[in-house]
Length: 393
Image 1 (cartoon, rainbow, N blue to C red):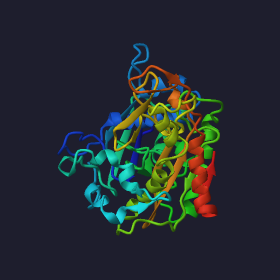
Image 2 (cartoon, rainbow, N blue to C red):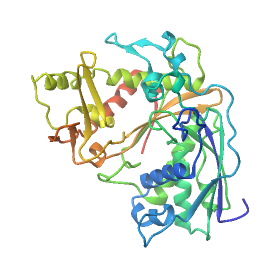
Image 3 (tube, helix red, strand yellow):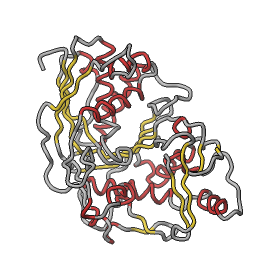
């Protein structure tokens, strides 16, 4: 870009991206605060010393720390992809349904995107469609030092390889792929961009190298963090090339979301022992123990209902409205091929809340330790065998 105070970023949307436009009919809008929030999250996820550097880089509400050094803006108008995007009515058709081992209906794409169908067809939000190009520029008032440059590059790299933007970004929507960056920073040359690879065998080495560079820059998280991090024990699973999709003809990204969503839905639906234990608890025939229900480790609030909703309860983190999932789903493209990517980050139980409770009640239980999330990954490894490729960090 001709200046050491600037960095240009190009992202491509891989799945529908629901940004802004919360009111019906509003166009989707990419706003700097949304971008900065995503960058802040991924920087915190990689740097164990984030508390020293984050306020200076991304700003703070404290009077003595002030505004962010980094200013973001759209370099060019959003170039929208062609056609498609999100069609909830079509996804509910029989061609997207399958049956689980217990005979229950499964529909992975509707399962992952259920909030986007809550208001009915006439009330749907409009996403930025897949294939759109986002060009962003970041500017500093003064020349950034080495640590600042590395922090910015790390945040963009992780967002564009593991993260997403907007609603349901942990469940496959808002997947954005980093295409390129334009800056005069020497550190950028050490950090390879994996997207654009024609095959998984090209993508994975570039991705692994990038992770290694970031760990060399910042060190590796150890112990129990207070928030979600890319620490020791984090896992990344890439689906095989040939996996079953819906009987309905669909785009590669639709097939990928359907597949991983169906796998997750099948694992969680009526999962033992949660389904039986919570029902017994509600009927007065059992008492929940610490570490139950297990599935709260996937994120809260978590609702259970029986008898068509006549018997129900919702679990929430104590003292919080919600807790985020340590499981990220996204889609990786290889030319005309698209595959699910499953990312399991390290996180404290209940997102760092002191425990879990039922909505409307005061009793607090110890949160589960997250082993049920690892059980889901093990289920995937068993189902797909050696063709499921994995990176362990």
